[in-house]
Amino acid sequence: MMSPPSTDAGWDARMAEAGVRVDLWDGELDDYEFALLGRTILRAASESRLSDDDLYPLLVRLWAGDWPRVDWPPDAPALTRRCATRLAAKGVSLVDAMLCAPGDESLHAAREAIVADLNLTAGGLLCVLAEHWEDLAGAEMPIAGGRSLLAFARDMLLEPIVGVCAMLWATLDSAPGTVNATATIAWIEWSPGDNHNWIDLSVNEAVRLGHPAPEMPIDGEQASALLAAAGAHMLRAPGGSAAVTESLVRTSGWPGETDLIDPLASRALDLAMAQIDGVDPNTDNDDIVDSIGARLTPPGDVLKEWVRDPSFGTLSEYVGVARTGDELLREAAGWLTSSLARGAVDVAAATRPAPSHA
Image (cartoon, rainbow, N blue to C red; front, side, top):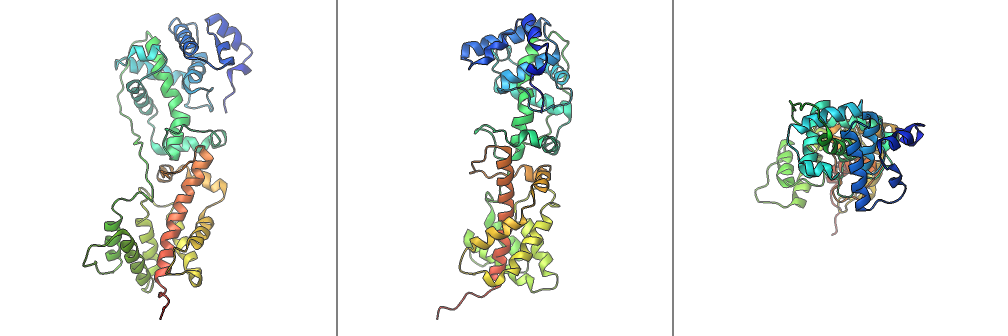
């Protein structure tokens, strides 16, 4: 984690010489004090009374409410200045910047410029999050943010410098540059529980596994039963276990490369079939699903590496209450392992005939 400027012996003197009232941060700022502090910082910047290295943490503190948490992006002050000069060419609102409350247009333009400057991708940003995990995992993200680890990475790593760029560019007299690339990150999320075409997906997958297509329209519950029955039938064929494992992966909703979940799906099916005697075809078997899901979840050091996977990083529990990085990580892992365990247990249940009530 970056050290706060207060650990720099000359910090207070430089701030006093620049006319920046950092003592205002000793208490809770009201709107007037916030605007006053912002104007003094920006004025000092425009009159070159602050170095880039001193200006950057001040503006992060002003925009994000705290000093920079980690030493990222690389050479952040210089990157901020480069992006700021590019933004000047885009005609972003001077009023927004000088009032220290950049509008949506300013923030979008700043984000686009930074992502382009760093040639940043979702996977790249998630790798940065993983590298700085120990410093960031306990931090809370706003309720208004997304519910995925990618949203957490954006809030913790990208948004502070985005706000800085959006505020800073209006103070510069540098010759404007141009943005020669566009943002490469799609800020999307997905969930195993948010599959709107589940019926069609299940029917098509059941047919793929050799089950005849239903002659009449069916509902979601019937579609799930159909898919489980097709998987149970496939298990009896040579190589059937591998085919069912592949089916579990295809129906998981996983949007990208499946290297991470292929072995999880195989393990889930093995565990479900090993507990076949305890599976009841007439119940939801929640206890067995929970047990298998827990056994699929790796230890913390391995789980942290899952953060780097863009598909796992965009997995969202859209009704969840997780706020910190640690909570988001555990929630995403729970969603994933429970989803795979549920599919495997449903197949196992379908291999057993329903008990007769005669």
